[in-house]
Image 1 (cartoon, rainbow, N blue to C red):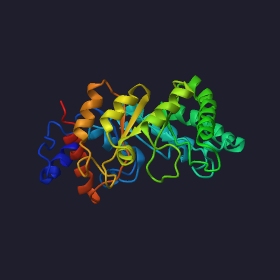
Image 2 (tube, helix red, strand yellow):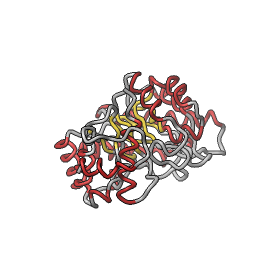
Image 3 (cartoon, rainbow, N blue to C red):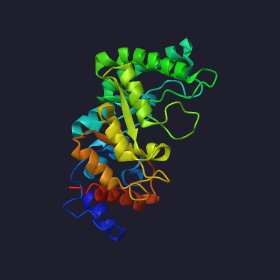
Length: 294
């Protein structure tokens, strides 16, 4: 499959397209696609999609919806990842929604739902050998002073960390840009929360798409927050598509985190600029181009 994809990519307008030698070779960083990203080439079967990802040089997987899959499918995915020598990235911890169950409210019922989600996440992580699970604290509670909301969020996350830490599972907190109602919006704010929780199981998920929208100055803020960052996700802005389709110089960003020693997963949490097989080829070539930093 790899050679065919490289050949079809000959007309794409990048100045450094993948050669036959590059096709299928591992990347410098561990970019992780998600299910459905290459369905036009690999079909609907999830295990076939994993095989295709591996053939194109990808060595990671993200699946936000992993907790919604059956235990049997989770085990099959975990086994296939192990066979291919691929690493499981993040899945979203099911905490019952953002506005309905916000940590900022300090509501014991909301906390109970979150802690139950932590316990279930531990079991899911065992089946797929996952190390990270995404947590979004939810919306602001505008009825409360901001500092009290901070305290509520920190207390709730500490209780979650107590469940996750013995199992080596890390909740990575993700600042989002989807709506101003979301409590967690900035990298430095997330750094402060992680420091206050003070657990190896509470770290930052630095999604460059969301943080470009919310604060910009990506490399500087990565440096500020480096000691609490455990995971990266990407998507270009505007549009939330593959690198090279927007304003972010991802080759420089990738070089920066690589030079700082990052060897973890870079999640490909975005769509494609083009549809069909052509769009999938363009996406692969976009990563080959952005990954040429060394």
